[in-house]
Image 1: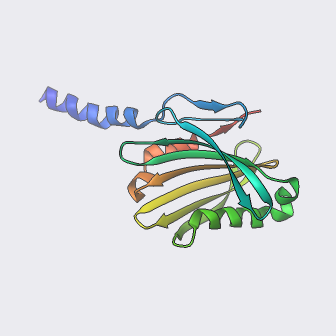
Image 2: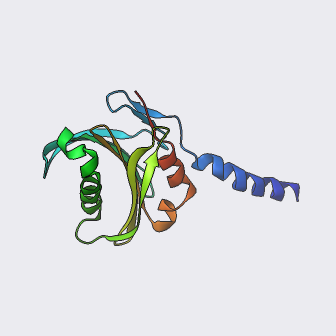
Image 3: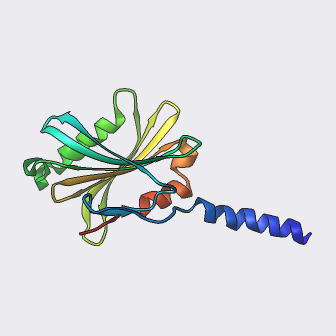
Length: 170
């Protein structure tokens, strides 16, 4: 009986400990830290946009179950990030996330951190995959922290812990 109780306690509490993100991953250039569940792969790509060519810096970790943890940061021209353009900027990023085939499940305005930075949280279904992304604007830099996988994963504790672990640094 004790062995059974010990096993149940381990599964209940030990499983939670295993699902928690590991040590923080930091980017001094990106000015952030976040807790991935393992070592992410960092890449930089260029993409064309309505405001010109942009450099997108990404750190991604993919689990053996093909769940994805990701953060990107992109510096936009100052003209695109003026307060009167925030709605257009966030709408464009949301539409890019959604793509042609995606369906918006939920969307809400958010404020991030002690400085109450403007942002938006978007949840999109793309076939059997769900994506939850928090888009945050600081000065002219856009951060997108996201998780992708099954709806159970995206709405679960491990994914939420990752999204909540983002800290912007100076």
